[in-house]
Length: 106
Figure 1 (cartoon, rainbow, N blue to C red):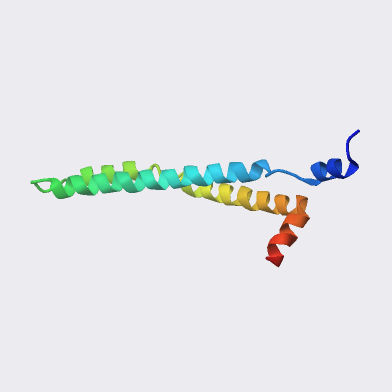
Figure 2 (cartoon, helix red, strand yellow; figure 1 turned 180 degrees about the vertical axis):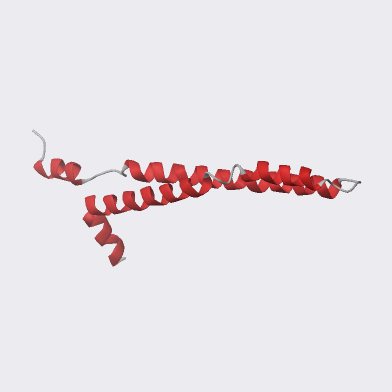
């Protein structure tokens, strides 16, 4: 037979909720979108700086517009990621009150 204390411990111990994993993933995607935007803007401006002739404003505007397309999904992804991350942390603290108390005492 199993020890009643060990079964009680395994029943109360809860792993990290899916919200944390999803939130971290969405924040990573948001960061990737911003990094792509910055890289594309840097390429656009370096192309203008390396040009021996005067660049056309329409070409510069087209490069900036292409770069900014990747920044539009960054804000909603970040908001959703932060919401899920906060929700997951709160669920984890509620499910493991002893873990939350032990970190406060340290």
